[in-house]
Image (cartoon, rainbow, N blue to C red; front, top):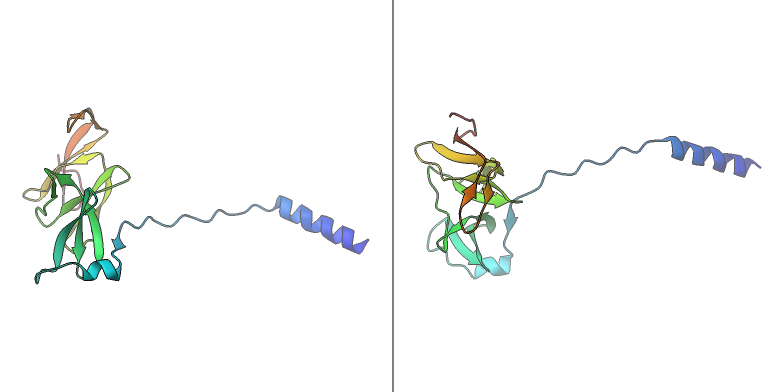
Amino acid sequence: MKYILTTIILLLFLACSKSTPIPEPEPVHESYLSPKALQQLNFNGQELITVKIKNDFYYIRKDGKKMFTLTYDDKADEFSDGLARTKVDGKIGFFNANLDIVLKPIYDFAFPFHHGTAEICMGCKEKAGSMLDGGKWKKINRDGLVIE
């Protein structure tokens, strides 16, 4: 009898308690090459190189840290004003030469920085080819603040 009563109380307690969902960790956008793949690269005295992996370009540091970058005319996006562009889950952001994301990927499109500003689009959609349709265009500074 005690066993049945204890079981019922335990079941009632479990049924009435609310579980707190475990928060998902922030997504990590950086990754590293395997040591074996890293050994096959020639840095020619440079700290950072671009490598084409399948159809995509990545910037890679000597320690193997890699960052996906946009590709235009079959070349990696170049650093402009110290930043290059990346795309994560369909959104564009910016990273520095240390391969740290400095402006989170939140833009639907972004041109490279030039003289401290970049044109970004929120809500624009890609059409056939490289055409963009709709959205609101703004200018941001290197801190991501809208300035125009």
